Length: 391
Image 1 (tube, rainbow, N blue to C red):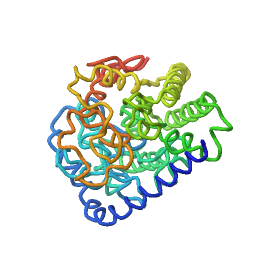
Image 2 (image 1 turned 60 degrees about the vertical axis):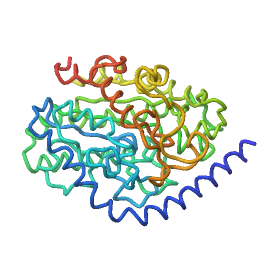
Image 3 (image 1 turned 90 degrees about the vertical axis):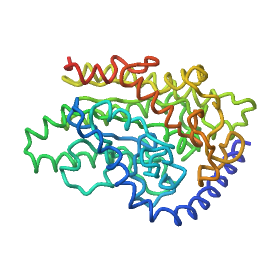
Image 4 (image 1 turned 45 degrees about the horizontal axis):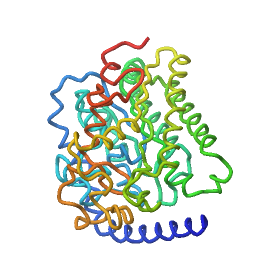
């Protein structure tokens, strides 16, 4: 039965990819050239703000991708409407949301403009001086994660791209100035969920028969910890690491696992909880091992469950159904056209099969910044980090 289910999921994904292929062939050419301008225009009003840090650098997956995949041959793209319809410019930019993603809100908190994608800027240092977003939808900690969707920039490759950026800074402004800029900037990492969506839960290479979830989680947490050390070795000091969201509550898995009344899939959420537990422990160890490091762990699972449990207080009355999609919970087919979307996303928790709405992203960003709604970050929040010297 398990193999039959996996075959069905594989066939479903092939169908979705064929539909998506047809759609973005029609639309991607136009949106490819607009996403960069949209990000720059929408952030221009923040240039007069007093910056709390020199720059914000972002690495991760579709939770923070601001347009990287617009420039790649992949099905994991959000460069068509209704994505971006509630963004500042009301146009798609490549963000997997109806509006802003968490790092957009945090950039404004830091007094910075919205950060451009690495592939969406010209390579001129002046355009990267306030930060770069290297995140790529479908990316994971494991190199091959998400490869069935096409090309993406893996987490390891993103770190290499940052290293190239750093070298550009050194050549342009000198080593001391470049090192000062990097060591005082904030690095935001949101990665790991695709290693479940596109690897473990799909049983790639028979992985779930070879490794128990706990063992797989240990591997992921250790790998991510090592990558953080690699960043530290190139003078990165201020790091925000976000945990995994309760993906077992996402519309796609409610549909796949046949949830009757919108109950979350606990076996999937348990994996996220385990990973977050391990990652928080790893961050605590790194803070001791790496002199001068200022690393915080923000548990997105905790923040998201607070929203789900207290949804009425937050103004959400649709908690299980995605705003955009098809099928039960709108979780069967991905968001492909404007006709598939609800009229008002602000009262929805989920925007599409896997991604939250702009309204949820705003709440999570508030929690990361100062714990406004509920405590998410340990041992401190981002506001404390930028206003306080590391130990």
